[in-house]
Image (cartoon, rainbow, N blue to C red):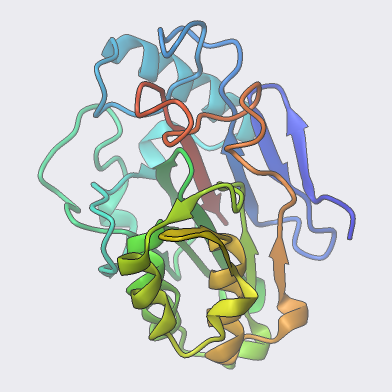
Length: 262
């Protein structure tokens, strides 16, 4: 399948000819102002960066995607499976400065237009949900903890239409070079999907895991048609000229911003 995330300046934009009114994308790391490690397009206010750098990067992205910053919403992610509904009242939350609002949120959805849902990533899986005919968009943050906690199922619980009308895009995340130990593997073995399809045992207490595929299998398990799910070929841990990778760079790095709007 041809890659549908197309690079424009600092951004990868998802192109769907049948749903041009839906804006889906993720920023890249190049040509920014942040020292992570240098000239980085960091989008996270919660790391030790000059706030003016993030604001400048936000302004550049706003111009590229034609979504003013005052319409953006950003939660404080905690690697759990809490999902909330966003309305126009939430516009601007945590964009200029971080607050206690939307704390502990790793999944968002809305049935309103002119709201841009945003979250930061640097290896975890960005999962975008949309249905143009039902005016629905959603965004989830799925690291290994969120995947084990089945955040995709928590997102689907908020879909009030037939899942045949839902589209899901699984964006850039780590490859199966990401490894887990036996204790974590046992947690995945308890999920209602075949772990042998996305976990590769390499040595004693070493297992490579494909989190993108794990989430796809969970989505299918809960009723999303296979043909409605797209997985990007991009891998954050393999393409460090484009992406930040928390695992490869040992946490000393910036964050990309994933976003979806309608």
